[in-house]
Image 1 (tube, rainbow, N blue to C red):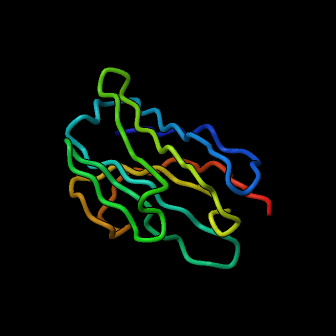
Image 2 (cartoon, helix red, strand yellow; image 1 turned 60 degrees about the vertical axis):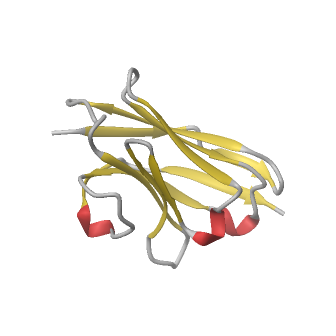
Length: 120
């Protein structure tokens, strides 16, 4: 079993930055694909970014603004979010799976989420 705990969310003005962290425990996740998803109010959960080994994947709306990285020594994945927009407001979830893919159902383990609110 893998437990995932997100942190780093908060309230920020448009144009600002936040760095989310996802700390894994229970098993090393260095060989897993680690993904970030988000769910805005009254919307479905959507893919944001993922990383496996040295490969990354991003949804178009965050390319050039968000960067996903991992520190295997700390069993932690990060999402650096720059140039934030009000439409980035959502609960952000970390997930672990086997494939570097956008599909939620392929991710086996999920964190509880962290709220990101971007004010205009």
